[in-house]
Amino acid sequence: MNKKLTPGYIFEASWEVCNKVGGIYTVLSTRAKTLTDKYHNKVIFIGPDFATNAPNPLFKESARLLAAWRKQAEAEGLKVRVGHWLIPGEPIAILVDFNSYYTQKNDIYRWAWDNYQVDSLRAYGDYDEANMFSIAAAIVVDSYYRFHQLTANDNVVYQAHEWMTCLGALYLQKIRPEVATIFTTHATSIGRSIAGNNKPLYDYLWDYNGDQMAEELNMQSKHSLEKQTAHSVDAFTTVSDITADECQALLDKKVDAVLTNGFEDNFVPQEGKPFDDARKAARKKLLNVASCLLGKKMQDDTVIVSIGGRYEYKNKGIDLLVDSMNRLRNDARLERDVLVFVFVPAWTKAPKAELQYRLANKEIPAQPCSGSRITHVLYNPDQDRVLSQMDWLDMHNREDDHVKVVFVPCYLDGKDGIFNMNYYDLLIGNDICVYPSYYEPWGYTPLESIAFHIPCITTDLAGFGRWVNDVMPQKAEGKMAPVTVLHRTDNNFVEIAENIKNTVLHFTQLDKRAVNRLRKEAAALSEKALWSEFIKNYYEAYDIALRKRNKRIE
Image (cartoon, rainbow, N blue to C red; front, side, top):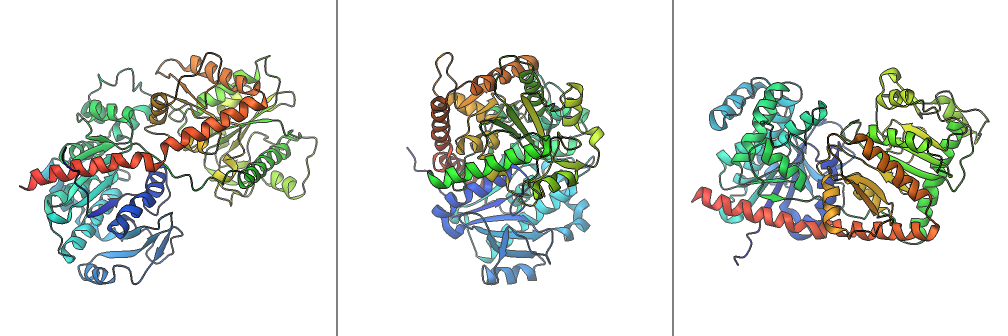
């Protein structure tokens, strides 16, 4: 067997480098240490610089780092800041100001059409912003390459994440063919659009024509850019088997490798007293906030359930969670109190003042707060989907309801005004989490859940759920698994809602010994998803890209 080709330099470009937006930030920031331990300062991340004169709390600038090249880059007209990304491993990061490229926008798009038939005519929204950054990132790599007089023998790899960095990968491959290019889509733009427009994605996946759907949904430019990049780069990759199917069906291109998303568990408290103390603190905070909001003391044996993530109501399964908890509320077999938190950021105006007063005065009056289903004030509460669904289902957290649902519509960054703790510091206090996703290329939230020893529910429409089905032994009838993976389709909403209800009900009936067993099994399963296990997929992708590069430049 031929020895794998390995990179001498790795450049990774993403909109989420030093820019905490979503799941890609988690992918990159948790994987960085594994790469830097192996490749050291030959791993360089490139992200957008939104405020060149303002500090970035995720980035520490260094005047000495790459100083000679930076001087040359500035002479060439590049505006960059160089430093370290403040994550485990502290990799080198280059933040680039891309605003100057807007004046060249039309020429750049003409170049993209002439060389790759990328159709930018019907672009709108964030298309221009993303592409100007993408081109700037590629020019940074070309400048670095020329300054250090690198050659094909240095095995430089450029990995572009999501459609937002596609154009730079195409540009770099054309002007600097010695660089091996990898494009990683974390979710196809057209697949996400189909799902987001409430069209049945999976029943018709292999019957959809991606180009036709792009026309119908006014996604022509993003789809064109993504499709041409998938067909042109040296290695086309994605993050899960389910998204690999999506790529083949909608982009007409089979992926070269699946780069399964891993994580590092260094944000989980150590076993023993640190873990136990963190869990007690989280439960105390969650129960206290709920008690003050509801006007009722929530007991220590309350079963705490949560869902978290972006406010994608159908895609994240928020609608299913609310519906299933209503079913549980009306199930006569439920004997314990269940407290459900919906941790989903919305358009929040301010913390609820009445709740803040009660928390500050450690007061739990006999009456609930006005609007006892939500912790913060929204700008448009009448248009909110969580509250509207609860209204429709007549869910009002009445005193005799065994199930209480609390909507937390803010970013849990430690400064929300109610909890004042970050998401992970609260997550550890849960008993079971529910993530019944419809569209979820991977799914970090359930993986994070089991890392904190919390059993969870997900679906086989999430990449994580598919992975669990492959690696987790089947449980005997009547035995609960640390991750319950439900089979979800376009048409079984009621069945899934019933299954979620029954799974949570089953959990409430377990004795302490069974719960502890589940928690240990959840933690053990999470260890199979560490980057130390999954990084080999990246090494495979590097080898594929470098070999394809070699053939391309011969």
